[in-house]
Image (cartoon, rainbow, N blue to C red; front, side, top):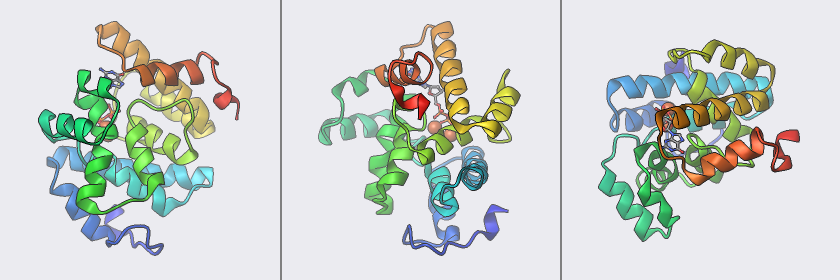
Length: 205
Ligand code: DGI
Ligand code: FE
Ligand code: FE
């Protein structure tokens, strides 16, 4: 149970209970419960893939910390922090990871770049992703309450190979965006090109 987790690595200046309360305060109960499931799934994937379990759990718990901020908060941060100006053209789906990491630094005083990067990349991925990045990306996609056609296959593929899970997800996401006629953030396409299209060698690693 996530409520019985005790931190021992001093990765963040909080107890697990304190960090849960900080996340809960920013989100509806529904989305907070999703974060707890992503935390638990991330810990399992970390255990299975030789990644620090405490680190993965923290990143999982925090991944949607900024999801419910208003658009103007994100737009202001994109402008004042010198982020990719093209980001303003997209929406919350792309912003809450990339720009959300800034709010985790500002408000929670968490500066661990492994955690921040996993949060930044959790929606759109990247051509190169650390194992932790891959774990948060996948935990968000396959946590137990996810229910979409293909999720069971995604779980099975990911259990066999984290990298194959990433490949599966980015292909699924790009397909979904194209079907909807939704705009595709260039990095989402770069992730697809790297992991599915074989344009960069990362997938072979
Ligand atoms: O935050 P969650 O709902 O738990 O999940 P998420 O962060 O993976 O996804 C947020 C949404 O972002 C999801 O509906 C897919 C969408 N998305 C991913 N890549 C892109 C995108 N939306 C647009 N418009 N463009 C993208 O490149
Ligand atoms: Fe998200
Ligand atoms: Fe999420």
